[in-house]
Length: 128
Image 1 (spheres, rainbow, N blue to C red):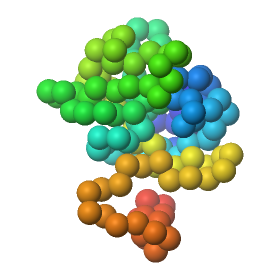
Image 2 (tube, rainbow, N blue to C red):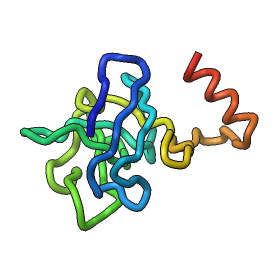
Image 3 (tube, rainbow, N blue to C red):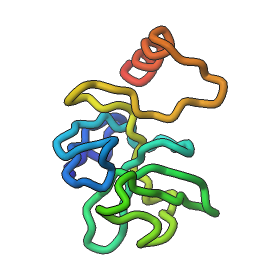
Image 4 (tube, helix red, strand yellow):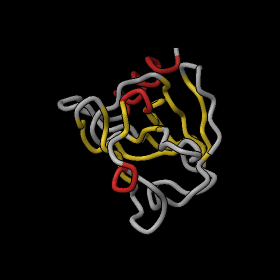
């Protein structure tokens, strides 16, 4: 995965199978760096050691960090392997898949509703 940390918004490219079937190698994701995740969000995280940045699902808060999991139980590394991820190691929240096939990926806020009008408002808020 390649990433552009330091920018408020950036693009990452998926390179592994750990988030399959949600994400596939080559998917391009819009990431909001420095954002606070909600349970269910896909996040860009540091997994420690010499591992590259990864995209995982933030499942729940654990102390000052996050328990993150992969969608594919047969590939990759997650908190079952490395333990909880410190909040400082969560680099950003995945907002959308840009290609192929654009799709919103952020977990909905409780009571936020939905629909095309909500999506348009979110794009305006995130992009400008």
